Amino acid sequence: MSDFQRLTISAAEPETERPDPAKVVAGDPVFTTWNAEERDGLYCGIWQSTPGKWRISYDEWEYCRILQGRSVITSDDGAEYPLAAGDSFILRPGFSGTWEVIETTRKDYVIRL
Image 1: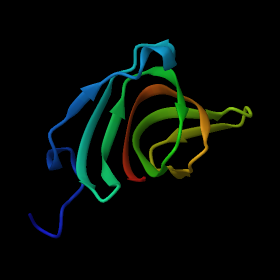
Image 2 (image 1 turned 180 degrees about the horizontal axis):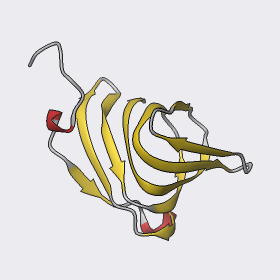
Image 3 (image 1 turned 120 degrees about the vertical axis):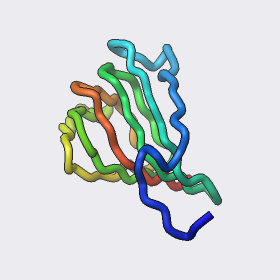
Image 4 (image 1 turned 135 degrees about the vertical axis):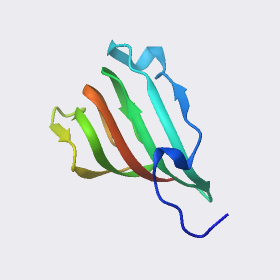
């Protein structure tokens, strides 16, 4: 394995799943993840979701950059964070609320447990 890797969907085999049905608020979102790096509590890759809305709760730290699509993250206190291509953000441990995908959304991410 090289010490350099481009972060593209060809960097890993895609894994497809859905959120826990108990967390789904609307729609039938389908997640596809290309996890390019996984070691020492660090995860890095590309994630995509089709439209839908589900509850989220973070125990980990995550940096994301939206590559395409539109989503809205809403915290439990009601603050809304509209997201579109080019937006970058951090979700810290303790964040909870909902993630709503308006248009199929693709992001790159780095997660630290």
